[in-house]
Amino acid sequence: MSIGTPSPEGAEPTGPVPPLDGPQPDSDRPTVRSDRAPSAAEDPFRPTDDPELAGPPPAPTSPAYGRDQHAGLPGEHGTEQAMVIGEALIDIVEAPGQEPREHPGGSPANVAVGLARLGRPVELVTWFAPDDRGATLRAHLEAENVSVSAASARAPRTSTARARLDETGAATYVFDLEWAPPAPEAGAPVHVHTGSIAAVLEPGDRTVLATVSRHRGTATISYDPNVRPDLMGTTAQTRPRVEALVNLADIIKASDEDLAWLYPELDPAQVARQWAGRGPALVVLTRGDAGSVAFTAAGAEVTVEATPVDVVDTVGAGDSYMAGILDGLWAQGLLGAGHREALRAVDPEVLTGVLRHASRVAGITVSRAGANPPTRAELTAARV
Image: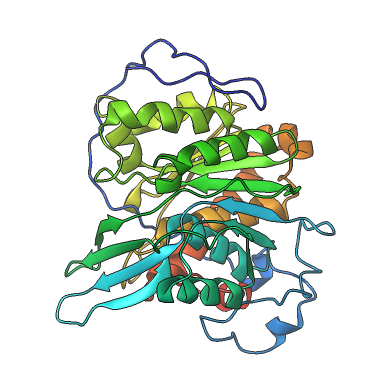
């Protein structure tokens, strides 16, 4: 067993490293958790001059900020924008005793919406068809203030994910996917995020890797493996693609279940620790009701304990957590290639605040049905 070594900036990954030793993973815990919610007065991520916060929170489906209302967000400088590259699809949700319901989804698209609801400018590079479901996706993304790249709507069909919920609200998925996006137009995002199916599914995985490599000189990179074993083949087939992106990423979020599937003979915490020592600035391991732990390039380890939440379902929880991490780091001025060394040396107290912030974002998401992340105003008003 080996985990790939880091590559020079912007380069393709090269070669394995010696195998890791470690105990077997010892659980199959769920991957949703929340942490204590700071009060509004304690929340360092809330804007100080946003008039929206003077009134009650908007409905959950409304964006927190309009296109011309981004000024005043913590950590924002001028026209900074994030790019997310990955799948947008239609979730067909089947719950016991209910008729199937269709909702826009897809892990990277959910991250883009999560960032947009927190007021962050974001573009999504994706792949859907000019059909009825594609029109639903475009309308949803545009309503959420997510810019959709011009070439995204040229697929022969719009992808779907059938989410089957059990009596506890946990979801299993069956996918019908089409993923062959063109390379995005030239741009200068401050940050690029990718993950899940888009990062490993042919032929679009090559476009994802090339896009991340091209932007690494000017942007920070985040990656969430978010593995789907039914789609990704064997672990031996999947690991090289995952490791190629690990080698290029600055920020990684992975669940213990992700790492237990990728490296079944190793402790997920040891895998995360080794990843953090081989290139990424930050690796966050989520561990269900055991909370989360972050490993940094500087050797720090930060643990945030989980607290119980009333879970309606877990759809989109990890994506909301990812958006919360990025929003928190953005607020601290730690995104962008020019801040890479500061990110690698992030103060543990700052990182603890970022993880608590992300937990609050995810906690609100799991407290209601579907991939429905909070707006900035909801987040500030909430007591998770």
